[in-house]
Image (cartoon, rainbow, N blue to C red; front, top):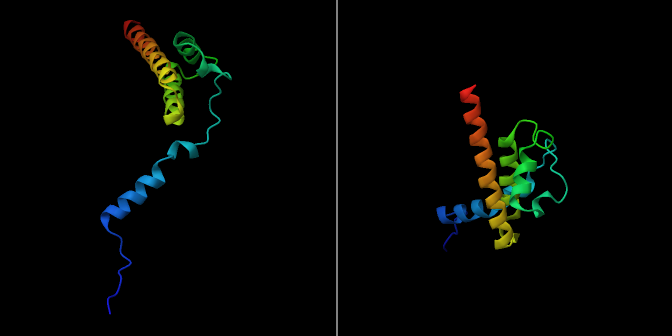
Length: 108
């Protein structure tokens, strides 16, 4: 009589692991930042300007960049290609702002 092993094969473990970590961003809860309601539905320049402001990101534009990246990750496949492209443009604007700010600090 053959006994079935309860040990899982490496492939089975990897599949279970990937399934459980697939939606990690959905479990994140934060109250540290509060971007204005509807901000991420606006154009790229407005998003970048708002996220770089001290009112939204007290720790600077880098904090705004993290918020934007988090929003894109959270949206996942639910974001339309057009919306994702606009958000990616906002990331470019924001990264330029961060580089500009770092360059300004070095000169001072």
